[in-house]
Image (cartoon, rainbow over all chains, first blue to last red; front, side):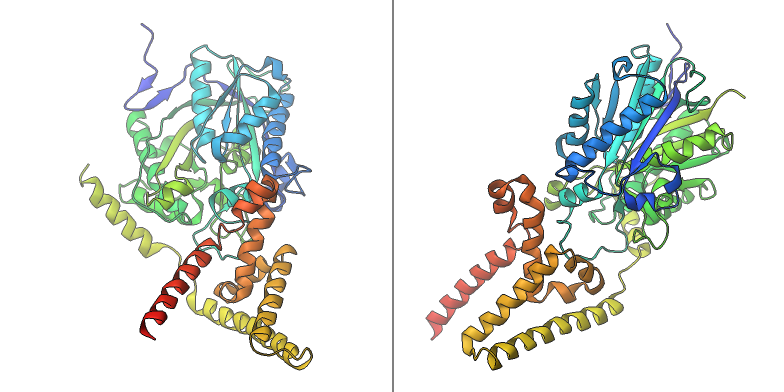
Length: 346
Length: 150
């Protein structure tokens, strides 16, 4: 009987520790003008990228990000064992149509903005289990496509409440390998060491303009479960990074954790707060499936690679409502999947 | 669990309500007042023009004013200007009839991609629909009441 890789209620640890060997990110012009602008692989000046609709443009971004990340590690689509990913649009059209073009084994996933960590955790398990030798994890979102699906047509004159976040236009891809990175891979020393599976948590928030507050309890729940299951403490992590809680969601997460004696404020960062600068018109921060992967791939992984951090807990958070459920009076359930990202070797 | 889930959720919702940043109503009201007022002034100018230059009167004059305002609302929406003014002015741009024009033109532009029948045709009233539904229903009720009591 092999040793149990599952610890506690819902945390897993990997022995093989799949390496993240490359990443690619494509973003829109507003993200490109933000504080991380110089780090992204490609910045689009035209949000349709020459396509006839935003949906098609998002799919093109998804596909291009996947190809770019594969190129960086010298993998062809033929050599890729599995693509795992998703997006925000109904029936996962972004991911599905991109996968049609890529023509690779594909699992389409939906956890709203937590899709990236869901993909990373599953890819890690599949590689650990020996079912895959490598995998690509991709997630994307597009401001204009998300606006029309979840809110109003773009030219509609409406004012956003101060808690509203801006959906990031971006696609981010990460490539994982079960064996050691080859010398030319962009990342030599970053691995996925394990993670904690999220639970759907709903505190009854119904305001679709306040998704940070709806998702914060899920992040707190997963963080708490992770520490309890793993027996680790916050001291074991150089940073605890959430996906897209934004400014107000961050405030609520810190308050929730404080009330349980977990003081994360000094170690906490949020991708939604990193991607836009004040004065860019996204004062409550960014959100969307694409937010976490582009910030992780372009910025956070490099911090691990450079040895600035040795271990971080990365929790992407997703709000699982739809406009239909919202109109029917349902509240907004949240989910957060966590992955442990570690630096290995000296 | 020290507290039942419902209680915890209720406390959380109260905290969210207490801590969340609020819209600055006073500034918004002032901006809405001036921009909305400005649109009304433009409407008055159009009306004066219709009356003095085109010699229109009564219903014709009102219709002329509405049609021109609706045209301007639709045009500025198409040029991508209306939503920018609306971000600044809030209700100041949604209450006047130009806001109605905006709420029809915006979906028309957006859903054209899904075709002229299933896209534009179906979605044209996706925002303005309730105004029409309840406007028509309301006028029927008022008409009936007036028929009965007069």
